[in-house]
Amino acid sequence: MSDFKLGPVRQIALSVRDLPRATAFYRDSLGLPLLFEVPGLAFFNLHGIRLMLSPGEGQPKEPHGTVLYYQTADLPAAFAVLQERGVKTVREPHLIAKMPDHELWMAFLEDSEGNLFGMMSEVR
View (cartoon, one colour):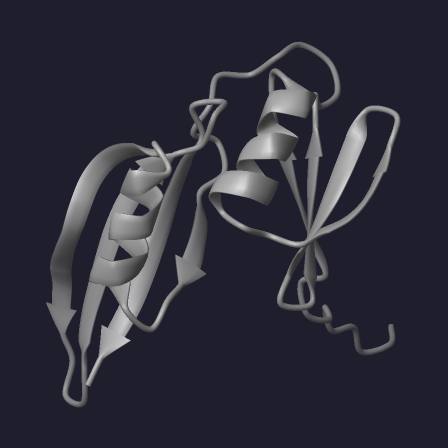
């Protein structure tokens, strides 16, 4: 048996109910670069990782199955921008943990399809 190692994550699939609405949200509200679209799929660039939006396979599932965490240098400012863009707030920025060399802060919001996503910041 040969050694086997998984490589880095290159793509994340996120199921959505309304692909055009979700594509607009990720492009316009979150400002993610749209790489390309093909029938039934939209692909975005997350700093070298592709985010694929699709209606999914089989029966539709309830949201919150996948939670994406986006890192940001200034969580309060990023949170304020998303609020101005009408993004639904689930939980405002709050301290998660005090580490030896930084504090971990997070906020939680919802996309246009009801999927939860987090924003995180390591404050030194």
